[in-house]
Every structure is written in C-alpha cells, then in structure tokens.
Length: 220
Length: 373
Image (cartoon, rainbow over the protein chains, first blue to last red):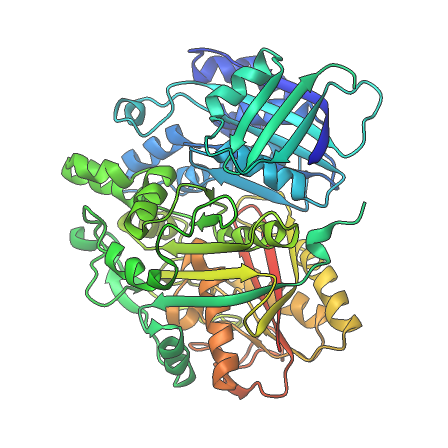
C-alpha cells in the first residue's frame, strides 16, 4: 500500500471554449509576453499548475494522450516552409514546459506520459515512486480541429493538477491509496480520472494492472 | 522515509540495439573503425530539398510507409523479449520515443492514404508495436524529446527496486522522417555539414539517425549494474541551456558524488549532437564534474537518434565494455572544447564504469551511471 495526500487540487473544464477565449481568460496568470506564444493546452496546464506554486524541489508528472495537437496541425500545414517555432511547440511535453519556462521554474524530475490505456495508473505509480517530497501531478487535453476529425486528436478540452505529499498538512484536500491487487487487469481512463477530480467524487476500484486505487476527499 | 529505488541496485540483464551500422556489437566495431553512417540525403525525402546528414537503416527511405518500414527491424530486434510474458502487472513495459509515428501524419497529409493514421499518435503507434510483439497491454509511454528513453530507465528501475515489478522492459525507437528532418532543418541546426561533436569550430551542425534499443532491468542477473540515475529540467528556454551550465551541474552532481565516493574509474559517453553552445557547456561541465575522465560522443557517426539515443548509446557502451575498447568521437577533430574529449578509441579495461548522459529541449538533462562487474 502506498499512500499520498492531496494538498491542492485544481481542475478546468472549459467545454468548447476557443483557444483565443482561453488565452484571454488565463493570460493574467503568466508573465507579460509569455501568454502570446502559448497554446491552449499550454495555457490550461500552466494555469492549473501555477495554482500549485511549483518550487525547485517539486517533481512533475504530466499526462496527455494527444498533447499539442493544434500546434502539430499547424506545423504540418507549415510545410514546405516548416516553422521552427511550431516544431518545438508541437513536441511533447511542450504543454507543461510552456508554463514552467514562462515562469523560469526549474524542476528536478519531469515525467511526461503520453498515450491512453493505463496512462493514469502508470503515471500515478511514477508520482508515488518519486523521491520528491511533493509531486505535482497534472495533465489534460486540448480539443483538436482537423486532426480530431481524423480521430487522432482529443474531442475534449480539460486540465487538472494535484499537489501530492507524503505527509498530511493542514488543509489537506484528500487522500490517495494505491494497493497491489493481482486481480486487477482493467484500467482507469484519463477521462474517468478527470471526472472523479472535477466532481470531487470518492473512488474505490481498479487503477491499472496489478493495482487498485482508493481516493477519498476531505480531511483525513 | 528512505526511498527504496535509489538504494536497491538494479541490474541490466539484457540489452540490445540496432543502428544503420547493425546490431550493438557490429555498430561498436564500426565505430571503433571510425566509420560514419551519416550520408547527405534530401531533407524532404522523395520531394527533394537540401541535402543534410542522416543515417538511415539499410534500404529504408525517408518517406514514411504504411505500415512503417521500420516495423520489421524492431520486430527482429525485440525478438528476445517478445511474447505475452511481457506487458503484465509484474513485468511491465516502458515504451519510449520522441516521435513515435508522427511521421505518418505528414505522410497522410501528403498522400491522403488513411492507412497512415493507424500509427499517427503515440498510443496508436505503441499499441501497434505491442501487438506486433505479442506483448500484454500493461505498458507506459514516455515522450520527453531526447531524454525519453532515460525516463523509461528511471521508472523501470524504480518499479524493480520497489519490488513492484519482477523485471521491467524498456524499449526505445525513433525513425527519422520528413516531419522531423524538416523541423530540425527549420531550426537551422540540421544543415549541409556533418556533425563534429565537441569541436570548437565556426558553425554547429547535427545529423539525424534511425535507432532502436531495449533493456531488461531486474534485481539479479547480468553483469552490469545501474549505480545511479539523475534528472534535471532547467525550464530556462525551449532550445537553449542556462548560459552558466547550472543545469548540467544539477544533473551531474549526485552522480559525480557517487562515483567519487566509490572511487570509480570512469569514462563518459556524452550527448554531443554537434551544436556549438550545448557542446561547449556539456563538455566543460562534464570535465569539471569528472576530472580527467575521457569523454566520447557517437552522434558524429550515427546521427542523433532522438528519444531513443539514451538507450541506443547505453547498449553501445555495454558493447564497448564487452569489446574492451571504447570508440572515439567519430567525426570530430581538434580543437575541442575540452581536453578530455577522446577523438580516438581507447582501451576501457582499466575502467569500472561509464556515465551515459543525454540532453533535450527545455533544458532537460539525464544521466545514468553504469558499472561493469
């Protein structure tokens, strides 16, 4: 059994909000000039992560199935005169790097997960095995446009971040417990995980092959 | 609370790679002979463009095919670790790459062939690979540009050390395409010149290369032991390092301390892409952290194999230990940024360990200290 405490949680589910509206809504949280170059996913992740007030001692675990799909679309369209800016922005894990670079916030460990399937469980294992005293566990997606129509970008836009600690501090928001369980072969999806966080629902069930998860909200 | 994964030694019990020069042993032998796999190839493949240094698997064209032409090569490479015993709760897989199948999206845009979309996302590409190898579906996907495979090695080692996995399989692959070649060409670091890692010259340049590798980690077995791993992320700039080299120092310090405390005699396998400022910072900070240790880089021959480079070059470092000789920095020449840059092969029989380091966009740094029994 591995236990961690949720000290802070932040979610953002802006529905079908356009990237320009997201930028306008969130730009105040970034240094002047930084927001202009950020993508929608970069703004969203940077915003929820910013609420955790990252420090140079924190580890960061980031998960996104599709990552920077809009920058990827634009980079593909920039050929034959490929855009260097769009190239670097389209590379995973630009979504989490944009906000951290904008704030000049170094971190010792950054574990960027991509993909689907067991991504939540695998990423939680990385967070819980990190030697850092505090791990910022964040992720999200931006709704794609042309790539979405082809089934290779996200349908939804959302972002989340949790500050996970080894000890419960005053004001603790919740508790996570991972338990080895050889009977578990199913996987908690990123979409289900976001719903649990966004609605602050308790959860007890499968996480990923070999592990179950218990998540409870409120003071422990 | 003590952290088990940094205290329990984890061993590399199997490891292999493939490059345009062959498997690990053949590639190591070719590097020892000073062979260069890079050739000048049109940056846009069949559509032409500037000719830039790229190292392709024999017979593979730059233009992506459906299914990817590299599939057969990785299937052969991963054959020793294929089958349903992998990808389970106790034997997880860590699939790492920078590009996965993103070149297929470029190919779709060019050709309109919807078959390319089958490999276009990291998950789709990794899941296809998994099914081809007969693996179970318990796998993680890491994508962190050119330190991707190092992250797989870190997390795999932690799972093994914590007793949560009996063994862990880390795989890494990156195959170049017009998509990635166009990106680096746009950044102007992929140009007509061949790379000369750590050489102090007027213009920097990189090459790109195909590469894939795997490693099996466990608590017991094999004759190589991971003594430590270290990570750091500067978050200073997307494509530049902190000018004072502090990011390199932060990553190297714990490994240097471990090497010093154990009195290890080390050689260094650096990142060494051929860019100037990163090469200068890397070689000088390594020289400061590991005084007197010879430094080599192999991307002047193999090109930069991107997210797979950490594991590909780890497999080559192991092959070099087995051969008793370490290849020099192929493609480079004097003057170098640091005197410890080894341009020629040398005997490694008197060395205990190797430090393998990689760097990536965002000022990401990764290092792995590997000791030979």
